[in-house]
Length: 219
Image 1 (tube, rainbow, N blue to C red):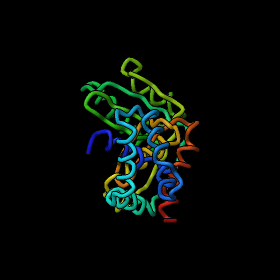
Image 2: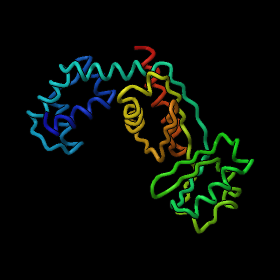
Image 3: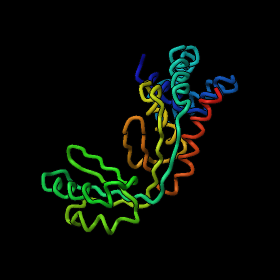
């Protein structure tokens, strides 16, 4: 399989509307091929793109993978939270002291809105925006690389089948992207997938994931 064919298959696999039209037999393969080449800047001939689309329609593995992911999403639950702030600090030994002070603070220890992630170079603390002044008293301004506000949390509680099924996380992320929404942060704490987007995008993001879960239940 060529890279362009795989790219076309990935696009089709992650675009619910196109996939539905293909299944209904109401989409013109030539028109679809032209659209994919133009809008995704694919390095493939028109005939090659048409051939890839036809192979996608006939490939049982693609159909099986899509069906498996949809089935795995049955029973997932969604909760939301608005007005979240995110502080990014560089990762070093000095910061660990302030992190220890932060997580042992009685106010934050049992605060359900607090999320902490740590990478090799940076550490992020997400919390309710209303607590921003309190956080700044613990973490010095000189240590803060960036501060982002007006975020919303979309918490997706997955079933054991979902978080052990290949492609579920990608499917959720692509569905949100298909609604034109940028994902600012992602935290995976099995069985939860926590996605952070802007407050203004929360309704659309909720709709995207809810429609995905609902279609899984109805299928």
